[in-house]
Length: 166
Image 1 (cartoon, rainbow, N blue to C red):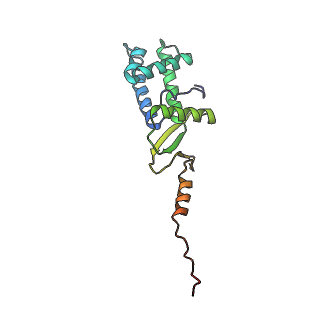
Image 2: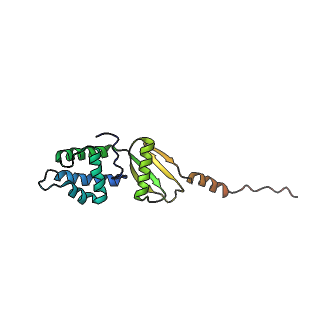
Image 3: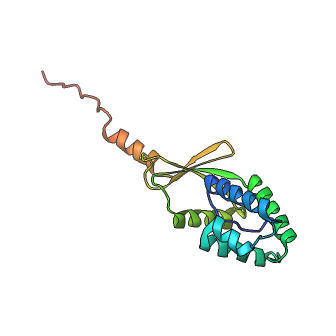
């Protein structure tokens, strides 16, 4: 499977990828059963929206949806790909919805040319922005550090002036 296959329509976070992998594994166990019907089992495991996206992914990668062996091989490649996707810890001041996760994912893909999985943590102390932990580096892109400096300066005890009156 080629590196440029984008799985972000199917999952964006590590927990979502784990869940997707588990569902693919269930499907893999059933591929060679007599009653195997790709559309039906994808619908059962993924729901209609993700089933449609998965079927599109099959077509885009020239996988014959009628060939059980092709489906099996492709799903095994996806599982391998999931296992090597880099994980970025993203600390936000809010719990992102699916649309926001898609936007983050597309931004990373456009700017790094790689798909990543997010490990999302919520920190209500962050102000306007995000903090990223990647490869042991912590990068704070929120305005909290600047706010902390301003706050400290505003409430820093002022030195008392010595009176020279006699």
